[in-house]
Image (cartoon, rainbow, N blue to C red; front, side, top):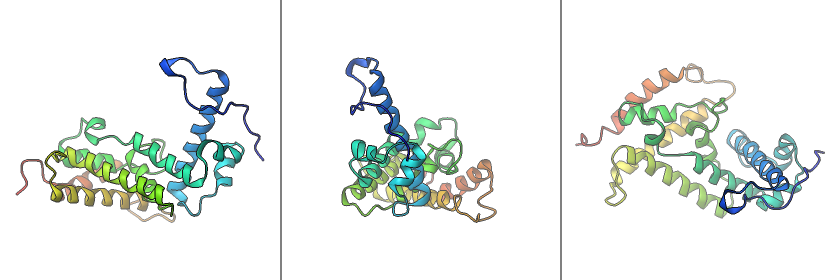
Length: 221
């Protein structure tokens, strides 16, 4: 059984940007390690198949720390969803170099789950699709998916002050396509040639498909 790290119960840095004391820094690192492992496990294995023992053994900490930091498995799952939301930003902010709406969204969705760049959008979408069975976690999950779709719709010209339901629905369709792509590329055995397709090839194909669903802002009929 992994030994519990020496740490204090506090997990947040002191106000004012001060350097936290060593015990608190240990606690913050331990909490983050649990989140990192849990996010990957929940995304790849699913909520039901992921056990707290598997998470804590991989993280190298005592299982009691889950209760200390998150309260329960449902609480850990909710924290993973909230952490994923922090990493998901409007593709416009992260991918300014891409040409047009389709290029921006295609590049965002073409990431590979489990890759070295594991915090990218494509690897987070499967986590957001995992149902926990916990009512509060489900509300968080649906809210995050809605916000992600809205951030993508904003790239295509959606304005929350004058919402366009058709544009938002089309963007949700694109988002669900990205979720399916991320899931399919994580399957074992692989679905070929999709699984081994290069990122450039995926971006090109996705851009063509997305361009048909989401014409450039101002060009929709």
